[in-house]
Length: 210
Image 1 (tube, rainbow, N blue to C red):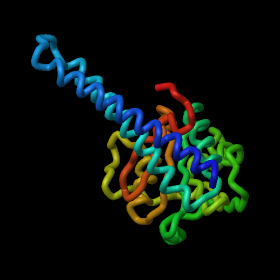
Image 2: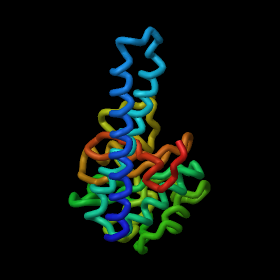
Image 3: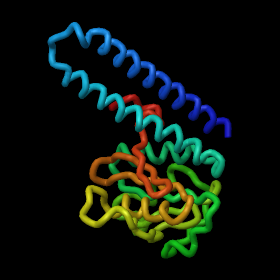
């Protein structure tokens, strides 16, 4: 687990730096607020962007914490999500934790192979017969691919979220599984836990682009 612990330390440090920067920016704005006649809306917009970035980095940090006790292949998962996001390849990846999942999913094709980022990414290449379903991961193994997950009870059809996101939220509403999802349209990555979706910061993969 040394790699995962290292990644956790990096993301935690990034989170601390973002918090400190936001705190400094707000303090500076308070100091000049009474003396300035300039419109502050631009500054408030920057605060909003900073808070969104902070939330994304925080979600990445806590996702790492939730995953690390259940798989030693954390670095492979992280690299896969980064590559899939860059290439805008839609993906749905379930990491089983304590709750059994067999009764919640429509089973797909058994894989039974050690988790590697190259194998995981190959499943979601456009045109692959299994790319539309979900991959199930338990510990360090890809159990199966092409699985069908239950859709969310709280995210209605026609919302801004597509079927992958509704499926990710749906399984997480019914179990303690952590479900990773990559949008085919935008390439953005999120994870679902407890029925809620959280954006994953690109900083998790060491990419500092915004």
